[in-house]
Figure (cartoon, rainbow over the protein chains, first blue to last red):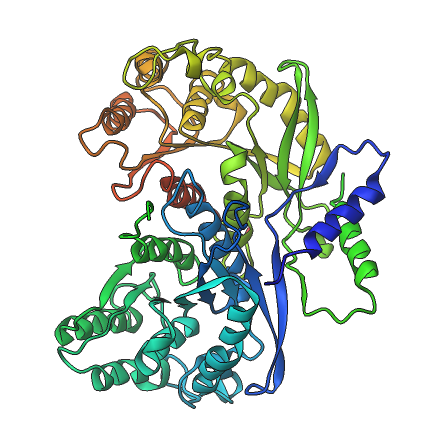
Length: 287
Length: 287
């Protein structure tokens, strides 16, 4: 098991540097997170991931933690790390201590779209933005066969995993639920881009999910005020909810939240909080 | 104007220490915050405050920022620093870049209660918890005459100030609004402990605020599920709202949010977000 040692080294060096000086300010001691670099053969590139580990209790040094894998790590890693840290405090105790893995992008459109398409949300071609799209299956394979084994080897993980994404990241989270449901136990799809490739994901949902079948997963999905209540964006989310309701799945616990006062970019702040609260609503804090 | 130099020094020292080593991990680069120590004559002690400053744009080095003063800095500083950082990003732009000052406690009951009382929320005496209560006026004087001048001298502040508190901190925020309204422009009172000293603050509100008077301030207050909808806690908040409505104040913009699914400790996460969204709902991002 790797220890988070570099922050302590940093602090030591800083103390040495400042020794003897009466300084009115010091750096604020954020609980340490780290950046892990991993070479991906599948993606043919080095990938950095951000890792926030709970502080291990000295009375329970072998404690293991669930893992939340977060897409668009560049945008929301600090937010999720803070939520998890705060909500698992002994005086809050709304969820278990959890490891957060933030995956920043190198080629967002390539990695987070399930099909090759150059059509934008209005159905018009935009090859400059969407050329090279459709690599989500390869990216999910990277997560499953390269990233997850590395994380499980390096940190004190349990087998419980959450997959969280926003926008194209939400599309990826839903795509994973439909195509590799066993990779994660819970899925968050915040404002998933269901418009992608002529509603590809909505069609895949209708096709893949058999009525009355069993899917023992937890799913949270949501949208903000993208285009207003009559927008295609909102209609797509309603359609996803209606499809899931119609399928009468056994074992699937899901919630759809609509945030009419939040934008596409402010919504993740409240949606990710609500998603954590939903996923862990029946968590037994006394076990 | 002071610059945040120590984190950079730290990073430099770290780089020197690691030079030549191929390390798979590095510390995650949190945007720097710092701990400022200030001696208070009024409180007769050294006080630390946590400071998060926006990164100054090199094209606009003289830019000045509003300041959010947060009580219970030990609990919610990182959360507020992250909200402010994220919501002011150029691709989110829901509020201006803002300095966050987190004030951790040394003697919470002394500083955050407006009167000397030993009665707990059930009206029973609890001198071990509440002995020495009633120092809020002195603490507000510390903020006004010792802390604020230091912050304004040290950082690039505008005159726009927000005061944020939870529980006893919410009580302090409301007490400040009633007794020193000019100290801040906007007030957040998340689950204020209105039960304190036989509803002291509710009585003060009824007494101090003249019907039809002018109070050009913004106020957000809220509660969670403390004791359920029939609890005294919730009734107190409803009473505060009813009193404000009845007074027909000119210039006061306020909102009351009730979060029936959140606890006293989970509620601040969503309430502080909603409070920022409310305070800056008419903020002109283009100015």
